[in-house]
Amino acid sequence: MSAFDQLRTPLLPADPDPRFVARLRADLTDAIRAAHLPVVELAPRADTIATIGQAIGRATLVPYLAVRGAVAAIDWYATVFGAVETVRYTGDDGRIGHAELRIGAATVYVSDEYPDFDAVSPDFLGGTAVALNLVVTDVDAVFAAAVAAGATVRREPTDQAYGERSCAILDPWGHRWLIQTTIATPTIDEIDAAMDGFAVTAADPTAGARIVREPRIDERPEVHLLGIRDEVAMADLGGVIPRLLDELTAWLEQHSVASRKPLVRYHAIDPERSTVDVTIGVVTDAGAHTGDERVVPEVLLAGRYASLVYAGLEGAAANAVLVRWAEANDVRWDRWDGDRGDTFATRVEHLLTGPDDDPDPAAWLTEVAIRIAGTDTDQEP
Image 1 (tube, rainbow, N blue to C red):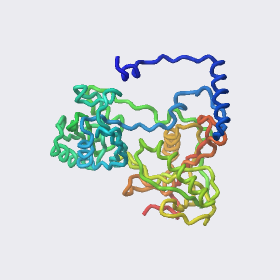
Image 2: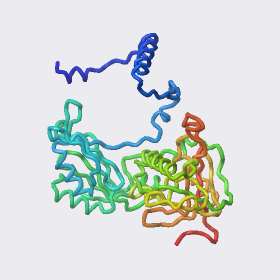
Image 3: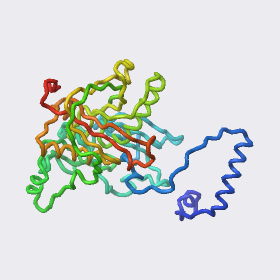
Image 4: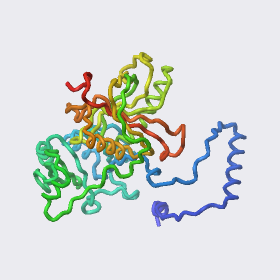
């Protein structure tokens, strides 16, 4: 048995003797203090997490592709899909241990094969059981570019009953790509009627929402904020928000601007490209700071808003509750079709209570508020 085989031998979990743990902790603490090393006192950590939802939180899922010849694969993805490389780890043996690519607003990781660590390619496996679904603005153009660059055709671009024009290819390294462009937005019932041999159903989008204040309409004054604006993939939003918030918090501290509870402003939502144009910000006094190239001042317009408050992390479900309520009550949003998708004059999610108030994410309160159309100050061009 090699050293790597020994390292890969499964280890069964076991609870250590509490007396050993206490003695080890005391010995380590004494050793650190004797060496005059800095000691950081951490707050006690909860022993358990109530639900798997709390354990996962707002997860971000990134595909990680292993290939034979990562350098050439990265170049291929750049040529065919317009990928932009942002990070590369090159080993002493020349293999790519890790690379990060951006394809549109999505993130993809790539590496060479490392069979000792179970990083194996479709060539090693003799095929792949996984497909990557790539949404583009022109599926026919991307398909042609892929085939010209050596992709294997599995299905040519075809209009589908579910509203996509899609194709299927294998890239030269054996990974399967489903490429599609949205051409229509049929309802679930329409898709079900058109799909022979399948029963098409959809989950209730409001399932899981914990509404603690029912939808209502009120007049609101103009609100000023400072924030960082970015266009990101919907799938990446859960990871982008805390990163931008950390950056914004550091900026506010550096410029001595009082920090308040954060908010997410949704400027535009593009379901075809699966992207959102958002600002991560905090409410400030008018004129608190002029900002800079990265952090910019914005204004939430005065007017009538429909809003609700929800608990926990099920923001999508809570938004669906508000949208369904608006449809039932003939409430129209101050919105229009823009270059970046469904564009809103003001649509925000404002954290009312957070980790500083309660360590349990299930207890956090967030308000969803969307500006209503029908006033003299509507922003639709």
